[in-house]
Image 1 (cartoon, rainbow, N blue to C red):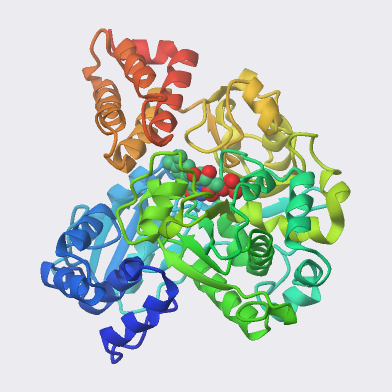
Image 2 (tube, rainbow, N blue to C red):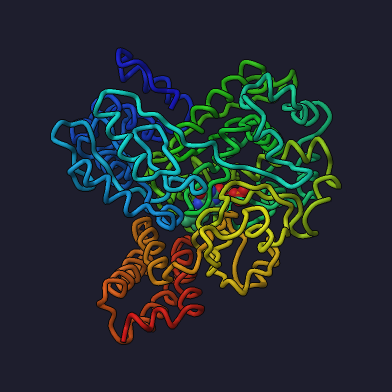
Length: 589
Ligand SMILES: Cc1cc2nc3c(=O)[nH]c(=O)nc-3n(C[C@H](O)[C@H](O)[C@H](O)COP(=O)(O)O)c2cc1C
C-alpha cells in the first residue's frame, strides 16, 4: 500500500520495485493489480493483458485472480466508493435500515454508480471493526458507530465538495491488571518508534539476538505454552519446531493479518495502536525459525492500520531492527506487507499462501503442512498477529511471568472483541479463563436498552452459539470446548431477546455462502443451499421438512471439505437449530 507510486512513475518501474520481494514474480500480482486499479479506476480486459505481460504469466492466470477477489473492480466505481458492512455485528445494531437509507440517498443499487459518477456502493462482508458497528468505508476512510443522521451528513458533505467530518470514536479498549498486549493501547502516539522504545520496545529483540540462540528462543516460546490466537489455538513453539533446520533452505514467516471472521476485531487494534510490538514479535520469531523474509498478509480493508504498520516497519528499518545484520548480529530480515482483496478464505493459512503467490485463495490439501511446504514451496510458518505480539513479553519477562495468568493449557492473556447488544462494546485484554458472564455484565456493562441476554457467540461467527443460561463458562480453549463451543478468535457476539435466531443464522450463512471459495462441492453447493433455505424460511415460505434438511446439509458439510470453512458454516446451523429449534419450526409449518 505504501508502494503506490506517483502517477508519473512508469508501471514497469513499479513492477521492478515489487519483483525483488518475491521468489516468483507472479506474487507481485496483487500489488500490481491495485496499482492498475488506482490508475485506471478498474481492471479492464486490456489491463489484465498488460499485467500478464509485465509479470510473464498467462492472461488466464490474471483473469482468475481478478474474478476471484471482490476488491478488484471489474467495472468502474464512483469517485467515492462506499462499502457498507452488513454482517452480524453491524446488522445487530441497525446496519440494514442504514443501507436502505444510503441506497435511497444515492438513488442507486449495490454495484451501480450514480449518474454524476460521484458515488457507488457495495454491501461488504465484515470489515473487521465489529466493536465500532455499524461501519462503512468511504474509499479508504472508515466511519463507525453510524446513525441515519451521520450517513446523511457524510453524503451531503461529499456532495458539497467537503471532506466529511469523522467523529468515529477510537475503539474502546480496556484491560484488567497486568496486561501483556494492550499496555500501550491508551498511550498517545505509541505507534511512533520513539514512544514505543521509551516504553521498552525492541528490548526483547536485543536480548534475543545478543543473548539467545535461535533454539533457545523456540524453547522459551514452547515452554511458555503460547497458543495460536488465529482460531485453532495450536501451540506456537511446537509449530515452529516442525520447520526443517537446514540453514541453506529458504524459509518464510507469514503474519496473518487477514482478520475477517465476523465478530473479530482485535488484530486491527494491535496494528493501529502498537505496531512495534507485532514487528518485534515477528523479528524474534523469524530469528527462531531461521527466516530472512517475512510477509504481513493484511486485509485491504484495513487501510488505516496498514498505513500505520507500514510506517512502523520503515521506522524499524531506519533504526536497524530490520534489514541486513540486525543489531550487529549477522541476522538479516526483510518484512513486506502484502494486501488481500476482500476474501475471507485467505485467512485460512494455505489460502493465504496461494493468495500471496498471486493466485486465487484456494486452500491446499494438507499434508504437506506449510511448515514443510508453504510459500514458494518452502518451509513457512503462518502465525496470527496477536500470537506474535505476545513474544516480546515472553522474551523480556520469562516463562513464569507469562504463565502467571490463565491456566496450564491456556496460559497468558487474550484480546476479546465484544460486539452486539452490550452497553460497552470494545476490545478487552483479559487473563485466559476469565468468566464470560463477567465479561458481559461486568466489563461490558450488561445488555443495552433494558433488554435481557438471549445468546452469545463466544469466538467469532463460526463457533457454536451459547444460550443465556450457558454463559457460566470460562474463556479458555479447554473450558469452552467442554461447553460445546470454541474460544476461536475471541470475537464475542452478544445477542439480546429481540433477536430472531433464524434471522441471525441467515445473516451468518449469507456470509459463508458468499465466502465459500468454490473448490469443494459440499461447501460450494451445500452452504448456498443452507442460505437459500434460511432465506425462504425468513420470508414466510418455509416448508415442512426444511429444518431437518438444514441440519442434514450441515452434517454432510462438516468435515467433508479441504479446509474448515465448510465446518465453520455448519457449526452455527447445528448449534442454533439444536438450541432454538422452536423458532425454526414455527417458520416451517
Ligand atoms: C476460513 C478460515 C479463515 C481464517 N481466518 C483467519 C484470520 O483471518 N486470521 C488468522 O490469524 N487466522 C485465520 N484462520 C486460521 C489460520 O488458518 C491459521 O490457523 C492461523 O493463521 C495460524 O496462526 P496461529 O497459530 O498464530 O493462530 C482462518 C482459518 C479458516 C479455516
